Each structure stands twice: as structure tokens, then as C-alpha cells.
Length: 73
Image 1: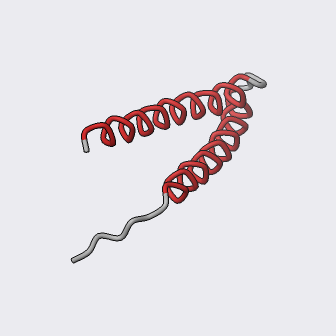
Image 2 (image 1 turned 90 degrees about the vertical axis):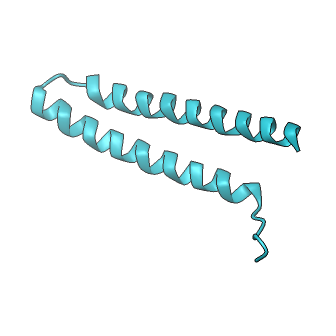
Image 3 (image 1 turned 45 degrees about the vertical axis):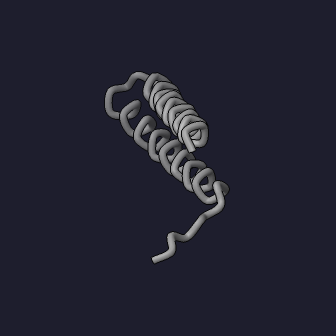
């Protein structure tokens, strides 16, 4: 069976969609946690920054792996 070749744009579009959803959830969760513990902007700022850091780490790891795989072939 022939394997379908997808454009790399689909992978990056998926990462972007995942980033937007996770930032939205982090903001929502941060606002709720700030209200619950009464620590004004702490979680609202910290959670989205954590999501960005993890997502950028994942992105760098994915793009580095792709370049490494292309060097082998």
C-alpha cells in the first residue's frame, strides 16, 4: 500500500491549533484558580506562559528531529 505524503503545513497547522486551544484552556483555568485562591494575576499569567514554554520546546524538538531524519536519508 502506498503511504500518503502530507504537506508539512498540516503538521504545523495542527501544532498551531493545539497551541491556541491550550492557551485558551490555560487562561480559563488561570482565571478560575485566581478567583478560587484570591491571588489576582498569578495563575492567569503563569499557566499560559507554561503552555508557551512547553509548546515551543515541543516545536523545537519536532523540527530538530525532522532535520535529523532528513540528514539520514
